[in-house]
Length: 590
Image 1 (cartoon, rainbow, N blue to C red):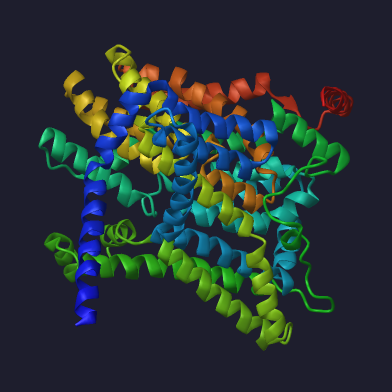
Image 2 (cartoon, rainbow, N blue to C red; image 1 turned 180 degrees about the vertical axis):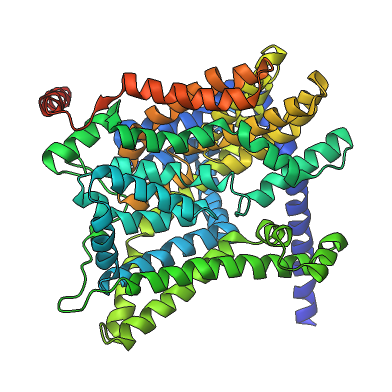
């Protein structure tokens, strides 16, 4: 009897809770719109505080914390009781951190980061990283070849931006350090070959989301059933920023010319050998960067190639299996028929990648690579089982700070979403320019939203349903609609690429063991430079109707000429004096 009395209120509370969760999910968008209307320009405060404070304090944790707390405070302020609002905002902050950690996708990303950190530590301890570095150093005999090899590796790891950042950096760091290439430059190359490559790859963890946005926008807004994959391919030439930033790396590396803060970072590295500035705080702890190969062992590149190969091959196999399982367990009969007739066709493989859970698969493959690395270390008698596990845990511990930053970044993204920051930006910008400037407007709007929110996925999800019907209303020409859709996808990537609160920016700093703010400060000049070319020599000309066959090559040539004119030679003998003078001025300013 007593149990029944307890059961009734328990069921009532459970029902009320489930009702509230459902109601919240259904009214989340309405809440964001209401907050955008109520707060207006104040919805920009949290991202602005986080970004500005990061550069002032040079502490990302504090900056993100204050940004999230300020956003929670804006949501909670309803009356004049400020102290009560502060109390509620602190509780809201705690709930957001817990929600970010409990989200399966986020948890998978954090576990993936920690596990890959353990794999890299094992590879380093077994001498695999040193063997790879020595092998690549024979081919990377100059700073130019070292940068080009880093760029090429970034293209090879095309299937996921997170995996790109976590794999390429640790492999190339010893090589670029030896060639006196600054960590700022290394992190830029990593970051610029992460999302920009994954965003246009025909098989990647991004493409499923991008295809779904295109298909849904056409079907829900225009009532058209389109070949989303075919349209996606047609948007690639209009993804100016993705293409130009990839070529910008090659152009600046070959010309050996830099400008802005990157020039001073490269001059510091070349003239003093300091790949990090004095006082820099690398995203990875010294515990990770100072791991050395065990003394007396025979160096072998296979101690690195096999675990990393398992990681990459395991990821590909995992994407296929996970996607196949999700498709066969779903309700799309057309896709099921495709796998029954041609399970290994290009379209089938592309669909499996599109429908896979990337965070889960990457964690699984990283865990498998860890097991293989431990077995190799013990089997070759390089490490005892206890030493191997201790090394693996040590590598994981070095990335705890990255996990904390990611949790705060995701929490900030959540509070910005609830505030309706994106809704406010869209409302004030979406109808402010004439038709020929629509692709440019979309690119700028996507850039602003993704920079302020630190998420390209969220920005794409906001703008694509608005852009396709708007472009169709202005002009039913399919090319016009396609270039506008391309502007959404590339604008979101540009803003996310240079935002200090973006997870890919954070992971690139971690992969290169670079000070996060130094990476952001040096990279943003280059990102803005390429974005300006994207607008002036890309979207404006195609908006006027010029052929993409002329516009894209022209933009590439103009970018190369501008780099040649604006850039300063890194190897200039007189540049040492310029660098020392610049450093002296910075010290006086401090």
